[in-house]
Amino acid sequence: MKKGVLLVISGPSGAGKGTICKALLKKRNDLHISVSATTRSPRAGEIDGVNYHFLTKETFEEKIKNNEFLEYAEVYGNYYGTPKTDVQKLLNNGKNVILEIDIQGALKVKENCEDGIFIFILPPSMEELKQRIINRGSETPESLMTRFKSAYKEINYISKYNYAVVNDEVDLAVEKIEAIITTEKCRVDRIKDKILDSKEGFIHEQLYD
Image (cartoon, rainbow, N blue to C red; front, side):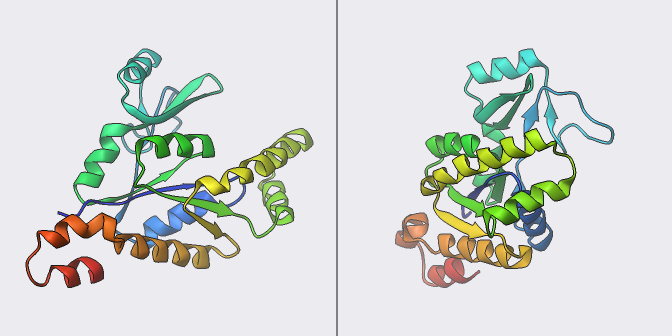
C-alpha cells in the first residue's frame, strides 16, 4: 500500500486557507482532514471525534508528557493540538492528510515530519488581505491592526515552506495545490524503494494512478 502524503497548509489570517481546504476536501475524495484535540467545551452542534476530540485539561497535559501530539498550543486558556497517532494511522493506510494550522504549529510539525508538504497561502496583496479581514465585520480597529501587523511578521516565515500559493481566486489556488500533490507523488525519494522491489507494470501504476 502506498503511504499517503501529509499536506500542511498555513498562512496569515485572511489569506483564505480555510476556504481553500474546504474546497479541496469537497473536490477530492482522497484527502482527509486531521481532527484536532482541544480542552475547550463543545459548541452547539459540535460532535466529539468529528469537529474535535474534546479532552479534559488533565488528559491533554498527560498526552503532552507522553509526546502524543505533532504540535500543540495554548490559546486563551485552552489547549489545541494535532494527535500524532491519528495522522500516522491515516498516512500508513494510504490516506492523504491535510493539516490546516497556524505557522508556529506548522514549523513544529516540520520537526517531526520532514517528508510533509508545507504550503504557504498568500493573499494577492497586503491591501487585499486587510480588506478581507475588514469584510469579516468581526474586528475592532485595534484588533484589525494587530492582525495586520502579525500578517507582516508571518510572511517572513515563507522560506520555511516548500511551496507558496497566491489565493487570488479559490479555484485557481486549489488547482495549484492539486498540481503540487501530483508532483510530490512523482518524487523518486517517495517511491524508489517500491520501484526497486517492484514487478513489471509498477511504475505506470504508481506514477499515473
